[in-house]
Picture 1 (cartoon, helix red, strand yellow):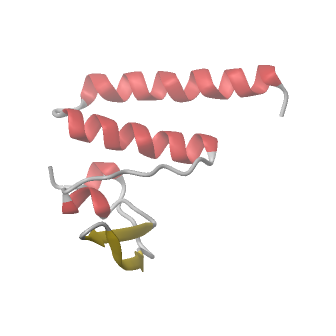
Picture 2: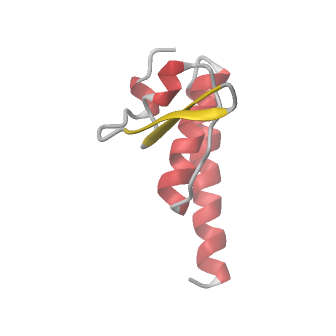
Length: 87
């Protein structure tokens, strides 16, 4: 993909994020929705580190740590969209 197309897609994704930020009730909701757009538009992997189990419901894969070591890795076959997460 050439730079012009990439720039246009990036600008469109940024615009979607800005629109979304104006419509949400919380920063967490805005960030999660923004990450969701970035993943879909850019095909990018996003790593989120959180203690909030609700955010994990959005993930394709959840890796849990205990005492600094991997305790479990689970695939989420039905990740929820950010709009369906209980904040």
